[in-house]
Length: 110
Image (cartoon, rainbow, N blue to C red; front, side, top):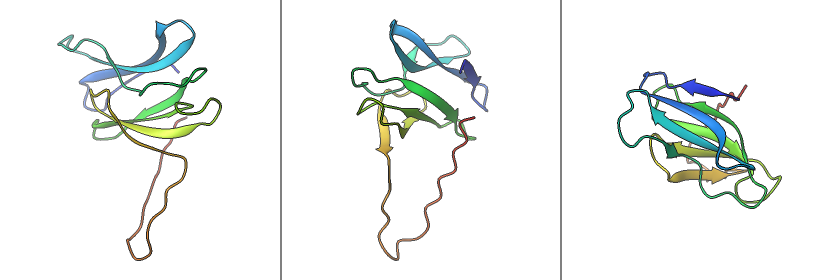
């Protein structure tokens, strides 16, 4: 999977076996080298869990990633804020109440 540079050019996002040799996680590092140096973006992973794919939003404010974070071998999408270790969205399905409006989720992880 390698790494990707954010559209605004401020940081690089990459997946690696960095903190634990058998667990692939997602990290962000500023291109400028400013602190904080490296931030883990994904939440705590279940035993056997890994980050498999990721994409950076066009405005560089979020990183969408796919992982079996909560249940091993059950892959879901998560969204992390730029430079934050807090996962702010995790679901394998979404329910929208009647009359609420339209929800669009377009993610290309290829």
